[in-house]
Length: 513
Image 1 (tube, helix red, strand yellow):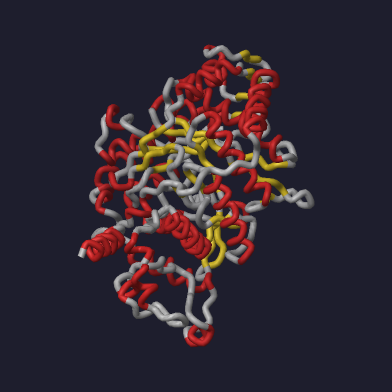
Image 2 (cartoon, rainbow, N blue to C red):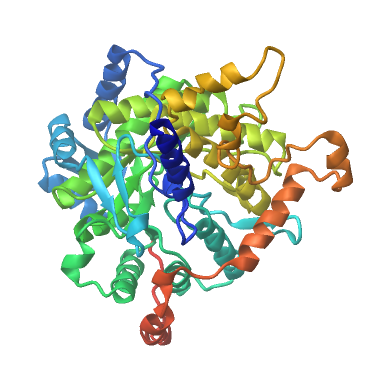
């Protein structure tokens, strides 16, 4: 009776992973089940860190924003106003690392979607920033607002996507008005942690105001945790431009999180060796973290790395390569060396959702997972090195992410799970299909594929001989057809209409460059 009770409780826990609202709790809150791996010794990581500090204090970084240079100067940096070069001493970096938070609360409209952004947490974000979009029904086309909304709704539809990102650039919306449309899209369709582009002070401040209006937050409520994140890309090698510097400052002052992410390609914008490229990446990330902490002590900030290599024949970026994987694991070592949560990324250079695209993305995904990344960006949908977001590719990548999510679920090995009695019940050469142990568990025992077809060849032929990308088309069509905004979005348009219309009437806000 005791064993039967334990079996029942286990079946109940498994079924309760997905609650009555359709949310999968096991996918929504994930911890990395794997011990972080290493590709460099402790001494080598210390040498890379020391080399990065030497870059900052001896060579410096060019900072194009006067305000940012002044903040760093007041913090003790040596500034050359003529060239814009800033040399940052290692004592400044040490102070910044000491004050940067190790754990950051990511808020969300749905409290069940909130996340603890820290080392050991495992989060995924969809492909972001793509100027084009592709699906098998409509082909490849420039990104527009409809594509932006559809990809947001796909992000919302899968619990294994934890943070929203701007998958498709809505190029049919004027750039001075685009931030209104992009924020409304998130606020009216999604209930996960939000993303805001850093495209200038006015656009950022207005995006923050839309969040406050939508969620009824005063200043204290808005700074109680992080309601918006942004990605800050340095201009490798060794440069911070105006909008990125403004983004670091404005997010720090508002208590929102900037994810400092140099995008280094070994052999192009960084040394051709992985260790040398990591040293440069690390220096640029430390510079951004230092600016954030000099702006506001304790500001939520994330270490980040997106390092791969180029094809030395064409100069094109490559992803999922051995160098990409090595760089991700090495970045994780550097993040742990400084004690901060960090961001990695997958990627795909392939032009379509083929075997190359799957291999590139999945190999890069494992580099991030084994490196212990807190969040992995571009985890679903990326094609052509980020030039296109593919709907079928998105669905196929979700399958890979859900597989990783299943691995983060603890597998029991108690007496009931081991099933000694089931082994005793089956004679040598027999089968386990009809044992009580199997019959009690078969409905929930294994992961049910989203796209994969596990039928035999004859059945596959009878069902139309559909390839994986063809099956993925049916999945995204169904998800979009069945989509309805979550409960947290109810009444959102009414809260924003008048404010947005007033801003549009006054001309909007141009980005800064």
